[in-house]
Amino acid sequence: AKFMWDYNKFFSAEEKKMTYEHYLRAVSTSIKWRTGEVLPFYEFAVSSNHFVHDSKYQVEYDPELAQSELPCVVFRHELSPIQIVIREEHRPLLDFLVSLCAIIGGIYTTASIIDGLIHGLNGVITKVNLGKQT
Image 1 (tube, rainbow, N blue to C red):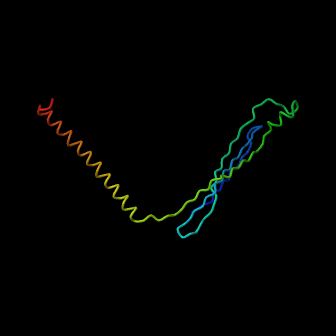
Image 2 (cartoon, helix red, strand yellow):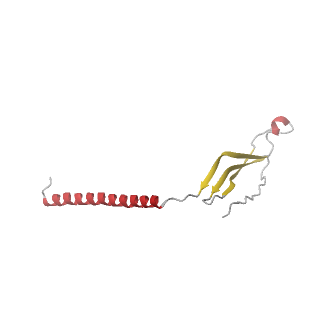
Image 3 (cartoon, rainbow, N blue to C red):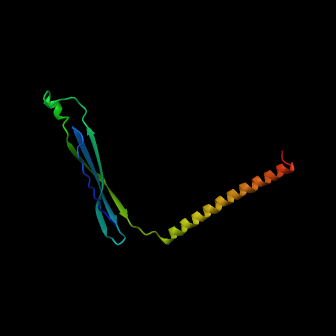
């Protein structure tokens, strides 16, 4: 299984005053096998966004306001306080048999209801055709 993902992407400013924001979210995850082994790792979600500052501030006229409009790169990261634990468990054979019987019983009951409806409608249609039902 592949637990690593390569995120290789090149970002280049195509316009003046373009800002890139990159987000990284990490969630601690572990797999617990029936043998007792534990495989810890992190799951990552990576996303990026970009925008162009759309103002008329000129560095020459107002340096303090224009500085907030300069292009930049922002990196944000978030470590989730929640941990995902995946466990391998063995279900007893009795649970499987009970589930199988429930499925078969449900199919049998549904088929009986449909058969009863068809039989009842057939009797009504027959009586209407013979003129005994008004």
